[in-house]
Image 1 (cartoon, one colour):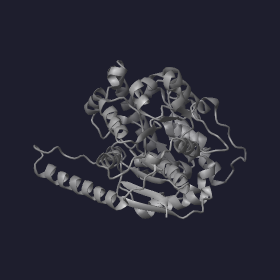
Image 2 (cartoon, rainbow, N blue to C red):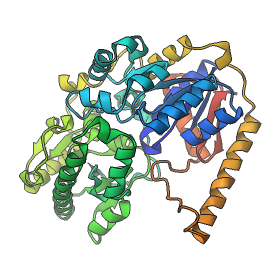
Image 3 (tube, rainbow, N blue to C red):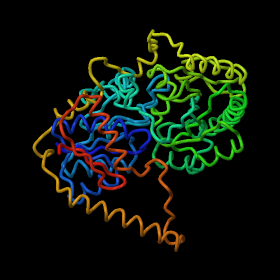
Image 4 (tube, rainbow, N blue to C red):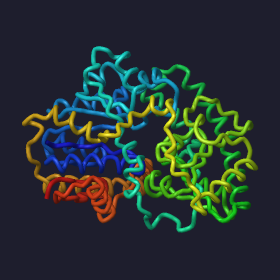
Length: 457
């Protein structure tokens, strides 16, 4: 069976898609992990034969509906798990309208849910298609489990000294200007489906500026008064890392790093600090101490689920005291052997099966959808040639946009999709095989900087 997985944000999704790919390839399936442009063009031109196209959302924009219809017309089928997830909000009703519709669900063959909340809401909202909606859990959550701790080995990007991880999602530093973000949401139909979004965006941005200052002030205070640890600030993939470097310029013991998956940093930190961030939920599942920093000055509405978790910290003085305590516990290895329980409000959002991975559940559904037409062999030489053509086209378009910006729109750097390295990808795949106990010889090949092929060698 041919499986084509859409990768949008590498630092968020790459490792979980590698997990699914390794499991699928070990069963004899051929798997491509790539950007949507490469997959869609290869299917459109017939370079790739029909297969399962696993996408990151079913957002009902006109563009996505049209793209998905072309995929279906070319005899492929669509499955999806929403990578935005909405696991950090209470309820799922608004998300079920913003990110799905009768049309996009009808176009899909299977929809995978993170947990009870999203699955039950989607089935209630779209009862005609309830048979397509599966409670599998998310492969990203699979990798949060202690079972995969050995996967997150220290890379060359991880600092050697002990550190507190500060996970940021303060979008006033967004690489996309605020007015462009509003335009994107309007063009994608979000404001039509949620009439209050325009007003709420302005109020949220105002509060985020307060939140930004409080975080800068707290980070500087921690760096100055820590008792032997550093602070790693991890900007969200859509934040402007240069802005953070300017805000914290000259401050010692601060590392501003966005390389690698956030899970790698969570696993190697002695504690995690956040406000309103999904990483807070990951920290709880990963059994890491969590500091929820929420001062009265921030004026952050308490609608984030993650803000109900961990140690609730109200001042920078309290933050320093608690962080130092956690560091001393880590330094002297005074950890308790008792495994902390995951709160019920998290388990409503995340389906965590102790006996089977979410990735394994998804693979079983894929295999139930398999047909002969989805299992035709591909000509990988032709596909690789198409990828080279795409790369050359983008290279020349970039040159032309610099030479004649009035005629050619400037090509912006893709902050979401970072170029991949074959030795790094293959090392990750090997670690996954070892942890999963898969002894079959698999071929892991980088066909381009944005495309991975995994299959039995």
